[in-house]
Structures are given as structure tokens and as C-alpha cells.
Image (tube, rainbow, N blue to C red; front, top):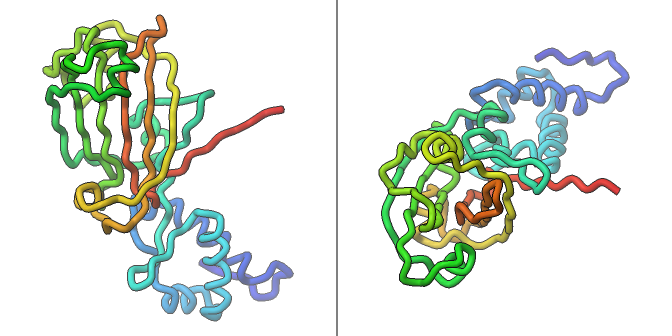
Length: 240
């Protein structure tokens, strides 16, 4: 936490690099707030304006999130998605070094709506095993998953859903998932989702629909994820 005031590198750029290293610590990745600007500026021996310049750049890059009256913290990049490389949620979080907490798990049976029935190629009177799981970091939940499973598969609802989902399907039934087709949209949370995700009803959420197929191109899972917008990044890489 030492800046070189004799360096040709501007102080705000030096402060940026120090903050980048600071927020690599596990507690900041898990949601801990940065020290307030007065204390941090004093510790770095720079003005608040210089510190604010450094923090503003990191906010603009999407690395930090600043909330009035709350403070500044690391923007949790919960997901990197795309068609070329994808993983289960548990695998994605493990690769990002994010500690995951399960807040709620519910498994039940439900009839599919028109879109889900069409995806599975079944009737509206079919009974799907549905898993609802609220997950997040140790500080707060940030995603609600609702997964419908193809009723033509031998899924019973009695499986161990605390395991990584695709690992469980492979171990129990030899179902190996291969392909994921995804759709991303945005919406306001609304009262019900806001209560579960611990945000305000007028806060934005991102909705990620995932259509999962096995190695034989059979539809396996219709998954809807409702994410806090401050905890989700979707990335695409295009090569010409």
C-alpha cells in the first residue's frame, strides 16, 4: 500500500494497481466492502480526488461497484458463458474461486408450460421433476435456478441434488450432457424475486435460459436462472 510520489507514473494509476491487487484477496471477492475513501486515501497518502479518479476507472471497467450510502465492493463476475465452453454452476464458481452457499433447495413435480413441453416434445399434462435452488456467496444469495428435467428420462426427484448437477446425472444414469443453447434477457426483479435475492423490486435482474442436450442430442434440462444484475457477466468471443 505504498505509492512512489517521485515516479513518472501518475498517482491515480499507481492507486489503481494497488486496488487491483487488494481486491484479489478472497474476502473482497466474497463481497467485503473496500475501506471507505477517507481512510483509504489517508493510507495511500493521496487526496480523495486522486483516489476517486482511480476507483472511478475500476467502476467503469466493471471491476468495482459503488453504491451510495453503502460503499464500494468487487463486482462478482458470477458467470462467463458462451457456446464454445460451458460448465455447471458449481464448476464455474470453482474456477472463479468464489465460495458458494446454498440458501434453499426444493424438488417437486410440476406440469410444463407450452415452451417447456415443446422443448422436451411432451404434452402439457406430463409431470416434470423440477429443482429450485437459491445460491450465492456467504454474504447474500445472487441467483435462483429453476430446472425442469425431461420426463422421458429416469430422473425421480429422490436424487442427491447437493452434488454438481451434471455430475449427478452422469453417475446415476449415464447421462452425459454435451450441448447448451442459451438465451439472455433483462427485467426488473419484482416483489417475489426481490425477496429471495435480497434486492429491491425495482432493481434489475438478468434472466438466463439454458437448454441442455446430451451426447445423443436428447433434451435433458430446461433451466432458468434469475441473477442479481451486479453478480452476472456474460461473455462472448468471436473470431474472424
